[in-house]
Structure formats: structure tokens, C-alpha cells
Length: 225
Ligand SMILES: NC(=O)C1=CN([C@@H]2O[C@H](COP(=O)(O)OP(=O)(O)OC[C@H]3O[C@@H](n4cnc5c(N)ncnc54)[C@H](O)[C@@H]3O)[C@@H](O)[C@H]2O)C=CC1
Ligand SMILES: Nc1nc(O)c(N)c(N[C@@H]2O[C@H](COP(=O)(O)O)[C@@H](O)[C@H]2O)n1
Image (cartoon, rainbow, N blue to C red; front, side):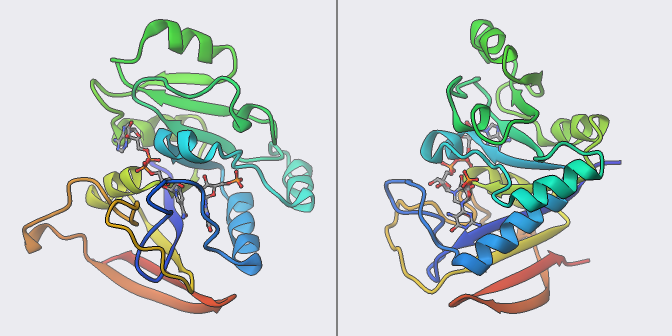
């Protein structure tokens, strides 16, 4: 069975995930970052796209040592598996994912990925080919299930979220909306990609919960049935 997929991201009140320079931008406040850490701790794997890795160099580790200790006491790795969707195997070998919060890193590449890049990455991570030109997320979810992932948190970015959202490959969406405007027509939004034109294609949602956190609001959505 494919993992339960929770998309979690933070956007500004005008729907941006970051500035037009695509640099990592603090949108969440302290309480929301704690909520994110809790969700990471509860997840078997945390995923981002290679665009996010190249922009942010995230470690995706747990910030709370207490959470890491609880996972360890329960027989799990202290940090959830870190997963990168990376068609051309562009993942930097000196990325923070390999230096901070040690644990398993899994990189999904396409058949187009240069062999020498994949071989170099295999020294640090599990590299799995899934898809011809870009990474096929249906294959990814099947492979993650085989690796024991039951709960997957997808953090972004804009292009990867579009793929999950447009193909309805998610169970829950948790969007934190921060009390700020970032602006910029080229700044990444919650869902970039090609976008729909036909309303019949729109991904429809049901609102499950609204919670005020810090100066912003957390919205929890599920797919409309
Ligand atoms: N505020 C927040 O919660 C978050 C913000 N971000 C921001 O998002 C931005 C990065 O987003 P993007 O540039 O859109 O990159 P991305 O992280 O969405 O990665 C997209 C890349 O993944 C690869 N890929 C392979 N197969 C794919 C598939 N099936 N579907 C989608 N992508 C596939 C492609 O190379 C594609 O260009 C950065 O500015 C980062 O700071 C990222 C995560 C969370
Ligand atoms: N939930 C959330 N709120 C924000 O304000 C953010 N900027 C992000 N960014 C995501 O977190 C990743 C960085 O994680 P580490 O600090 O390296 O563990 C970043 O790459 C985005 O995916 N998220």
C-alpha cells in the first residue's frame, strides 16, 4: 500500500513559498517550526525536490534532540529518511543532508541521469531510478512503501508540489499562511508547474481544520470525495 502522504509547506499571505531569488525564506514563526518538527518526527520520510536542495541546502533533520531520542528509543532511526526527487542526479555530494542529522538519504533519479553522478551519489545515499525523463511519483511511492515508509511528509518546492497536487497523490495538505506579503511574479508559489485551464480538471479540496499559530494560520485540507 502506498504511503499516507502529507504535504506541508508555508506560504505568505499572497501565496509565495520564497522570494523571487528562491532563497530560503522564514515564513513560519517559532510555534509553527515546532509543529513542523513534530510532523517530521512522526513521519517515516521527508521529501523535497532538487530545486529546493539547490536553493536551500536543507538538512531536513529533526531540530529537537528530544524527538530524535524518542524515535531512537522506539527502534527507529533518530531522523526520518530524507528523500530527494532529482531527475538528473544533481544532488550536491557535500549537501547538509549528508552532514547534519545523519540517517538514510534516498535519491530518486530518472533514466536520463548521468551514470557517473549516480555512482558518486551511491557512496552516500540509496539511488533509485524511477521514470524515463523525469521522476515518476507513482513509482516513487511504490518504492518508498517497499522501504517501509508508511507516512511521507512532502515539503516542496513549488514544482514538486504541483506534481503531487495535480496527480492527486496526497492524503492531506497542511498549509501555513504567514502574516507577510512577499510578492514577485517569478517567486515560487504553493503550486507552480503547468497549471490547469479546464475547471473540470481542478484538484478539489475539503477544508478540515483552521488553527491560528504565531501570527498566521494553519489550514488542513483533504481531497474532496
Ligand atoms: N516555504 C516552504 O514551505 C518551502 C519553500 N520551498 C521553496 O521552493 C523553491 C524551490 O521550488 P522549485 O524550484 O519549484 O523546485 P522543487 O523543489 O519543486 O524541485 C523541482 C525539480 O525536481 C525535479 N523533478 C523530477 N521529477 C519531478 C516530478 N515528477 N515533479 C516535479 N519535479 C520533479 C525537476 O528537476 C524539477 O525541476 C525554493 O525557493 C524553496 O525555498 C521549498 C520547500 C518548502
Ligand atoms: N514549514 C516551513 N516554514 C518555513 O517558513 C520554511 N521556510 C520552510 N522551509 C522548508 O524547510 C526546509 C529547511 O529545513 P532545514 O531547516 O534544513 O531542516 C526548506 O528547504 C524548506 O523545505 N518550511
